[in-house]
Length: 125
Length: 113
Image 1 (cartoon, one colour):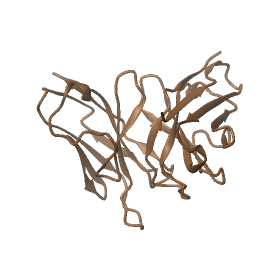
Image 2: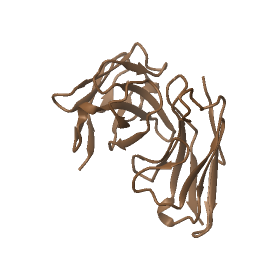
Image 3: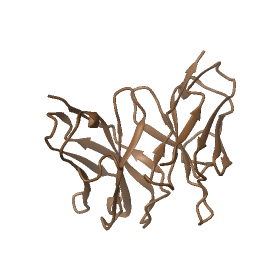
């Protein structure tokens, strides 16, 4: 079945780095834009980043721009989020999510129709 | 930046009764392509969010028809015609047109009386 499985979360000290992965299955991964969305403990949802289906464009929330990098390996059906210079305020559950429309080449207007179960990132000394 | 404001932040509903959640955006969500990029999600307790409604009023696959979305411009509403126990959770609206690309409302927690 269609599935997204995140991994790579954990406890990390402020200023350090972490890389999250999201393994996709059950659909043609290379045809869909992919997103990262996070949720701080007890808080609401915050969109983090998007990468187009072919990896040609990437966009970030201001809160992570310059520190986080989204990437994908379509040959491995895997999405990544490289997180550098981590801060306490980056503590959250990180979800990967699929854009609903296949092969869309625009930076707006895509629903997130499939979500992973999330992976927890805790930034603490 | 665009701000999405949901009201109420919580509501308690008797099973079988209707429920309504409002979402207001600080800027119009009507794009020049004619579409309005407003979405609704439900996050059930302990689960990941799930898509309910896209582009204001289109129900996502598998979503019961008791859920409906309406609105235009800056004012939007999610309605549940007859609330069931499985509808409990936090409902989020989201805009998908303005920087920073995608913005969620604060969430509305639905409880069953």
